[in-house]
Picture (cartoon, rainbow, N blue to C red):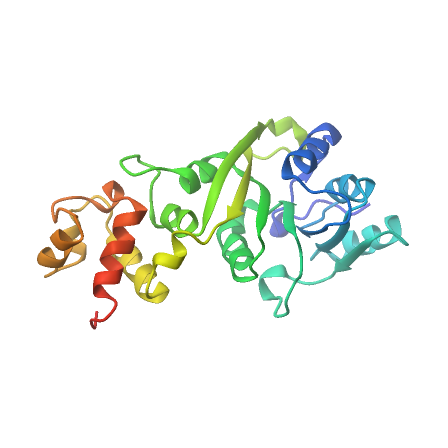
Length: 251
């Protein structure tokens, strides 16, 4: 069997009870198609197939890819020997269920949004999960929180002990569910403008927002934002209101 490769950020889930729970709580059901990123040794893949779920699984490690193809030969799974982040095609899947590499969590989640995957059940670093779910006025709230929350509803499912992996990671893990929603996203007049405003606002998150968005005191007040507030105090809805006010202006 393949050896652990540090450059791929590999920490293999080895606890079948946890794998089974992830699949169960994902809501995946018979007849669906599930996307898996980084299939590893196939512990999640096995649980999905046992529920008569079709799987599209990406694996970048050549040894693991060959191992997986042999192990699941003839079953309802398509293995892709390709870097998911470089994949250019479209994927038709009902959901994503994955233990994703922690060092590239953000680009993977952004790619899943780009692919319009309706539901994502992901095992990620516990501290990272806190940032995704953070609310205004908390130290974990940042531009990533806004990016994800404006597009989805996030639920924390459960934590996973380090002993459930090999090699054991140096961080704690959490399984979350990201459910795609359009309610807030549809209120945004110009998504590019919105993301630009959020990025600049959080560029120095401990400073008053007037220091990041210079010369905009009047429009900040119009959006119901005090110029002396910090970005970490401003809810998603107010960023939407601000970007919409600016959407017809050059900024």
